[in-house]
Amino acid sequence: MDSKEVKRRIRERVWRLLEERGVARFPLPVRGRIPNFVGAEKAAENLARLEVWRRAKVIKVNPDSPQQPVRLRALLEGKVLIMATPRMRQGFLLLDPRNVPRSQLGYASTIRGAFRWGRLLSLDELARMRIDLVVTGSVAVDPKGSRLGKGEGYAELEYAILRTLGSIDESTPVVTTVHDLQIVDSIPREPHDLAVDIIVTPTRVIEIEPRPSKPSGILWNLLPCRKFEEIPLLQELARRLGIGKPCREA
View 1 (cartoon, rainbow, N blue to C red):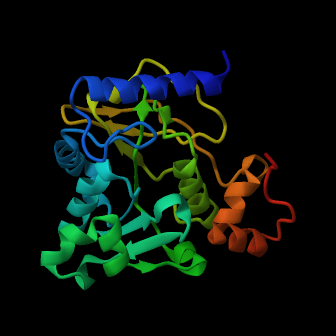
View 2 (view 1 turned 60 degrees about the vertical axis):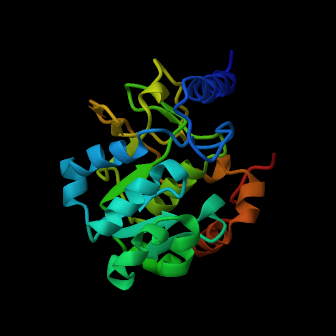
């Protein structure tokens, strides 16, 4: 069985398990999504106790529902929040809590609110920025730090863009918040896959040792042309880097 089929089966099993055990939360059904789960707030609370969180001043978080409590906690604690826009169509948003009324921080931590209270970042701004911590959503993770998203590669792409720009590097911690049921025995890892350094659930924290390696930038030869054509930020970056044919035909 090839790795893609193994990954597909793991995703299907986890999505089904979360719903069968009654821990899947709106939006439903969770199939095809980074699944929201009962206890997401507790996982965010456990994350906020970690030294990597306390030290971080600028945090990049994915836009999915289970990480909304993470985004809210970052804003409440005065941290600058970088959020990828859905499907990377508009790049990245910056939310500075100093520019958001405290009564609006909850709204600002949602996708719609982030567009209201945040602002889109240019490539030059991203390149000048130093991000201290990356928080990503997952469908499944294993004890060695391998992870699965929903299968579209956006977490990998977000990470790879920031690595290419120098906003993050190999030392930047990558964390995921998940339900305990999302931890599986083993996930195959391919060169473009994003691994995590820390897994945080509502009940525990798993620090991966040794830290897994991660992609050092965009693997243009593996990038589907369809995705390249849908994301203006990628097109601008390719032009700046002088890359002629920066994608792979399906």
